[in-house]
Length: 228
Image (cartoon, rainbow, N blue to C red; front, top):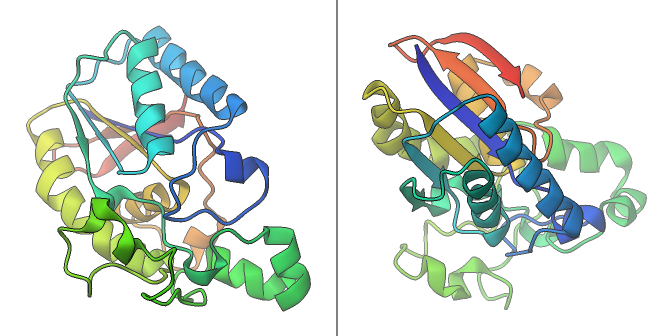
């Protein structure tokens, strides 16, 4: 039986302020640090021993990964970072307050932007100072790949190659894997792993800082899933 653990980063500073975050490199809040350390303690108590860890290139996920490994006495475990595990890019919504945006555009429209599988948010122009095109951590990427906004469908399309090239092969080598990432990158991977429909994925919410454990067959089909 193969084991995969997802941990959504702890509550970020912008989560606490109810702002769209996306690819903006926002730090963990004090509560987020508490959630991440608690996740590590739960993993230690469950006796889960990792062989490898994967995370995004955003510090709220990286720090969560570190806290989880530290609190479970596994900080030595190899850790790999990829932009493909980043949160979905919220385009021009990034930095805006969610309630104020709902008041302006309507709650139904904002719900579509947040939860729909294939509805794109308003896109952020590449010339905008906040565009990821200007961020050196993405300098090696072709500018055509750097998004100006994503829905869950696009998030899955860019996360799936990393799953297929890195995470799935590690699992097939019978390595126990930690993925510390974001609400939507983890939702995208969960959709693929569990075979969740485009409609049903709208209802899936992965809580911050709560380890989600998958037990998998050798063909990576799900035997069991549970939260610690």
